Length: 386
Image (cartoon, rainbow, N blue to C red):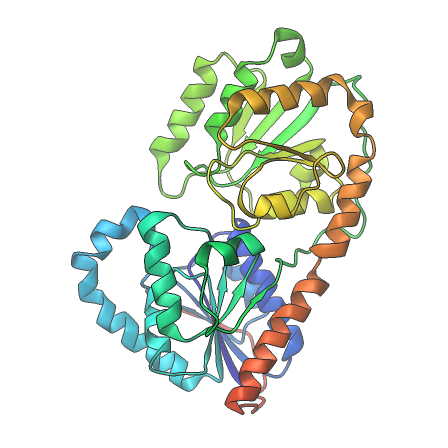
């Protein structure tokens, strides 16, 4: 059996790590299958995938990114027929093609020409015209669809003709949570982890911290970790905002890291102050797996992760004042949330570990293959092609 897995990224941010875990699930379910992994370029993601895929193929993909829409809709259209032909050839030669996210337009367009072979896993909640375009692409493709949250499924609102299922991302956490060590006698360690972008809310966090009184600032240590996607100006603007607010002694800004495990161990609380809907919220789930309660925006899939007042906190999105108030309460009264770390870990184990995701993904794949009546196993070897 030949399975092709297609991903739009090449780094190791949350969406990239989710893809690696999906490929791991597929490999475990079909250990003898030939699994080709298609990426748009080489990057940190290649190393973990090389242990799972039979072959890693790096080739151009026609990816619908908001910042590239003008180029894609003009000169980029010239490359679309070639991209679709390449995708059609892979679809035709595969028993199943797993497409990670709805923005890989060439594969969704070509899937219509190879009915019954595509499974798209939707991990995003786009806005406005972009959502309309992506919804049309999925409907056109005829692919089976996995949504990573109820919020994502509701945003796309596909009709009853599509075969869909909601499967929360399965995230590999530590074997046991880290012990809680914060009791108010040292500064609270607050972590924000993720790509620097208008969506994630780094600026909201900086403004919320700026509003805190000096006595709270003295009891707070903050790390904002991440990089902007090919946008150095955004990173420089965030650093300038921290300096202008006089918070250089409180907030440490550092670049993206491939393995965030040490950061979660360092933290007491992890914040996800997203300004626009997250399809789920991987960082919040990873935090809970380490026994770190998350402070998140009440928006999108984040509302499906956190139980306010039990496993973490929620505040209104894009509201620096509300976030500031929540931070002050967390710092002033650690006893009020003493049970949150244990409850957060328990919720992670119940809903978000790899077993739950593995069941949902493999059942969707098995159903797709059964309807297509394709099941020819093939051995797997590891290599990297470019």
